[in-house]
Image 1 (spheres, helix red, strand yellow):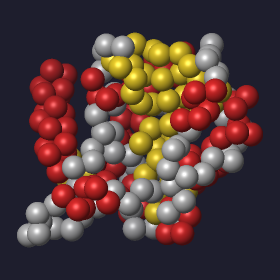
Image 2 (cartoon, helix red, strand yellow):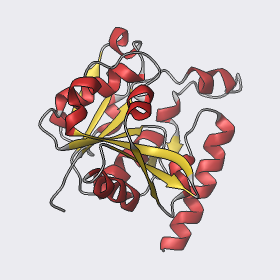
Image 3 (cartoon, rainbow, N blue to C red):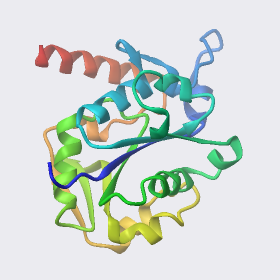
Image 4 (cartoon, rainbow, N blue to C red):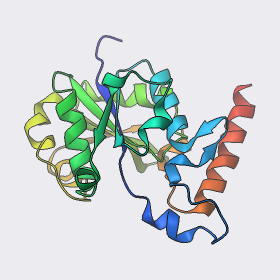
Length: 209
């Protein structure tokens, strides 16, 4: 693939909704640390990103960085302080974009979306070559990843807060790339959503076997 935007896996959030919903007797693991198949939620998300063969950078915290051992080189991991992480998804996106400032574009993928398939990432990357903003959609419903062309660099590196890049998406013509991947709509915010995602992953594995 000639056009190779970087995938930014955003994995520095606190996941407070997930922790609050855990039973008292359950181990107090962050949602990205939760077991998912043979790895973790974050590990599965990153594995799919790496399998796309696009460049990958993960923005995370020191507590979660060990989850990435064996998957990525140290240069592909941006570790935020707790104070920086608390500034929200917008700051995490900005940090990833700044780390890959020379990329021809960026695909933003939340770390709690382990069902997004490698082919989906490539489809959005292809769409981004023709559009300033592109996103995956399933049956017309908008999902992730969301891609941004290099011309939007100066706006992306200034992002702050929990809105992420929504204002940028609203400001520019955004192209919805239809994909046969329901995983683009599945993020994990509660233990029930985790169980549903695990079941869906098992189904996908059975179909690919």
